[in-house]
Image (cartoon, rainbow, N blue to C red; front, side, top):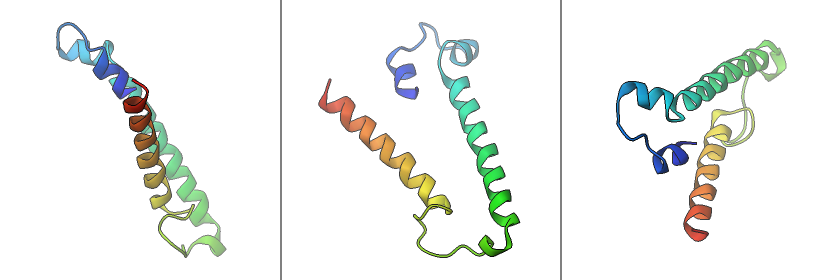
Length: 86
């Protein structure tokens, strides 16, 4: 979404144009939903006494590293696809 907004910018860069004629508001909404979902996931994970202590590598599923690796991997795959198939 950010790539689309950068490739098709508004004619005049004002605060109203950035908020309503780009996908910035949608991106902010999705990051907020991600934060709320992550918080609920953490509450459920800590609520269970046997899963309270996280063990294993940081890139395994219950850890934040899992989310970061997938965010970076999706970005890299998208960027490579864009540059290879222009």
